[in-house]
Image (tube, rainbow, N blue to C red; front, side, top):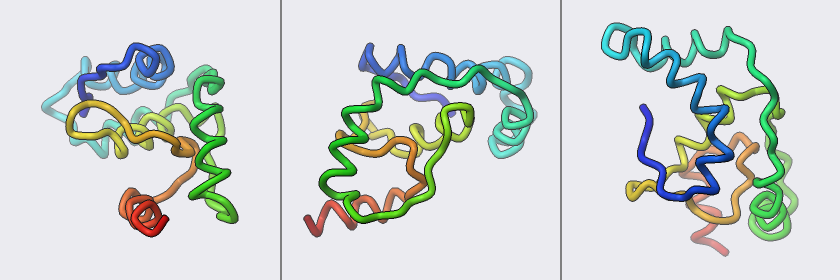
Length: 118
């Protein structure tokens, strides 16, 4: 499931990650369930992502709400997992929340709970 992206900066960052999903959608958008598409995308190899545009957001998360947490983190070569992580946090309006560690594997509801308590 791809959503409309309003922020040009995010388009640049997501271009490589989204390519993995687009290839699968072109093959057979209706014949394969989303989970199967993700599984197939994960079997392919991709160039590692340039994560430099995430640096500021990650730093703010780690210095505030994420301080002291020891969450599992994705590596730049885990392109499909990063894309999935980004899509799960996308707002209904197409944007994203600010100051998150986009490479951390954290449930969306847990992040909302943490933010409500800070």
